[in-house]
Length: 126
Image 1: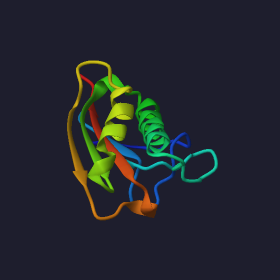
Image 2 (image 1 turned 180 degrees about the vertical axis):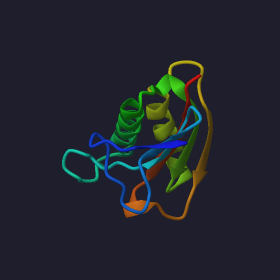
Image 3 (image 1 turned 45 degrees about the horizontal axis):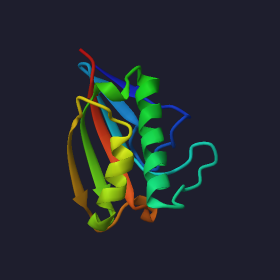
Image 4 (image 1 turned 90 degrees about the vertical axis):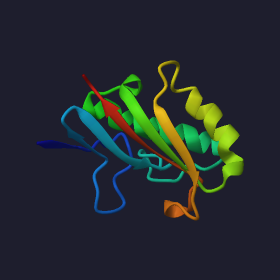
């Protein structure tokens, strides 16, 4: 059985998907980009602020589902350019203090709405 998760505290999906789905204690969260859910605007004033907005969106989806960042077991970071890695990693690291999740970071040719960073997570309670 699966449970669909959606919250107004994170951007609404911009395609045929949900913000997250829970199945067997695992939460599979769709990739988040730097859309401010309060006004629908992209928050891309700097790569650091863009990453903070992405992480705020990730956290909002987790909270809506009853999960926390400490429940995250896997993340995937998509970057428009690997030259952004250090700044994104600095911000990302400020959200995870210990028992870090597994992660991969990949550079891609393009991301939705021309953003520089997208992050998806998988979390587990148990």
